[in-house]
Image (cartoon, rainbow, N blue to C red; front, side, top):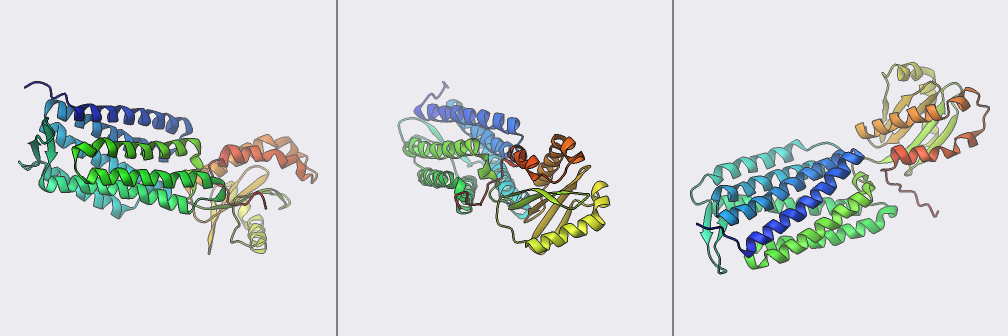
Amino acid sequence: MGLNITVEFYIYLICSIICAMIFLVLIYTAFKKKKVALSLLSLSILFFTLNFFNNSLAVLFMDNVLYISTAYMLFFSVFFMLFFIDYTLQEWYTAIKLASISIIGTLLIITSFQEDAVGIFNSYGFPSLKKNGYFSILFYLLMFIFVVSILYWIFKTSLHSPKELEKYSKRLITSAIFFLAGAVFVFLQQIILIPISIFFTFSGMIIVINIIIKEPKILYILPFKTYRLIVILKESGIDIYSHIWESSNISDDLLGGLMSIINKMGIELINQGELDHIAYKKGVFLITGTEHLIFGLIVNKTSKFLNKCLNNFAFEFQKNYQNILENWYGDLTNFKDAHFLIEKHFGYLPSRIDKKS
């Protein structure tokens, strides 16, 4: 039997090439910026690429095994997409959600071994392959989860977006419309509608990827809230520098009392690395120390990412102002240019302070 070179083959091949290009851009950005979330999204796009590529080969050779493998590729794409969404929403993974998708994956494998899992049909003047029975149901269930998960992330991110990211949140809503339109055409299960579905799906995907690469802050809207950074001189307890991202639910009196306790009881523990945060009713006070300073970050919950940012900021702040700190006589203007360190180490955190006010 000769090669089945049809319009469907070219459609899937072109889609795999486009997806591969998106993957390369994403994985390059992920490694360059060392972002876990982008790496997870890259893996999802990689398996989505393999889904299209295997589809093109399956149609070309009319091979049932290759066609079944497309469903496996979709499963892994959904799996890593859920990892990406959980990481950007809460910086950890929901075990129940991942267990549920794993059960679907297991059932997908079992049903793929049924004799009638794949059929051949010829409705548009050329032979093609089609998923049947429970295998087909599970495949489209994965597609449904994939689309709903993306839409959920888009709408939740947009709704919680601060004013400085307003234009990007509007673009996310536009991408959601494209994704929804693409999904509708997919679920109609008509080959003639595949190009239309692909156009809308890829348009939505390109909009989202473009936003993430242009403005990575969009990935840090939901997993935590960062309120305020303060830098305190150990010797005197004086606040020498601060930066605010959002109005805090901790009062100045409570903050002052907290710092007084740290000055009296906690400096040695901070120096030894035994005290890295203090929890209070509505949030957490992340703490680190250097030779002359205590650094505190007021957030709504503990975070490995924020701890790393705080430690890096503290190390460089101490290093840059070492000479000034050793001979400091109370002039706070010495530290006014520390904003460039904020941008360097906390630049991905969106601000909810209205700069016009």
